[in-house]
Length: 231
Image (cartoon, rainbow, N blue to C red):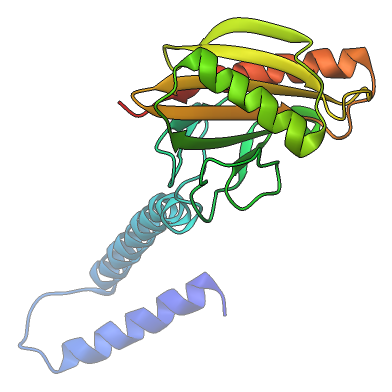
């Protein structure tokens, strides 16, 4: 059916309806103008409805999407359920898993332990975090961490030992080979803040060249820069 056929049908309907109404002056041309006006109103209403639907759709996508995910132009902030620190993730980093239970302060948990918060960064570099109450100062707790790493993973003595800050607190950044005689590099950052020791570790199982390792170290430092400790 064409648009003109529809217009003619409306003309007939209006003429038939008018026959039962009180006498008044009207003409075919007047009725035609009335039908045209009604058609214009209907088209306008349809356009408004379409615009309203278009405006609602993005809102719906956002409302039912990943509520905790990053939005364009905004950094993603992750809060540790068990350890209380927050991490503002740099570009290329994402959370992998959070600890399912709190660390008891013993040993040197690795990346796949259920007591660590695990993050994955650029080129598959990993970072993981644990924390526990302590009465020791930074120097003593750093020494304890080195001993635990040697006992648990046959790590070397630190090949590098730097003073840094984490969340504004003094910290030590260690570079070790685990096992001791391998080329497998592990970095460990230790800080003690308000009676809590925090240990952040990093490795990349796929890194095989000095260039790869340099990029991984830079990525880990970016990760550490995003840490904020519980006040």
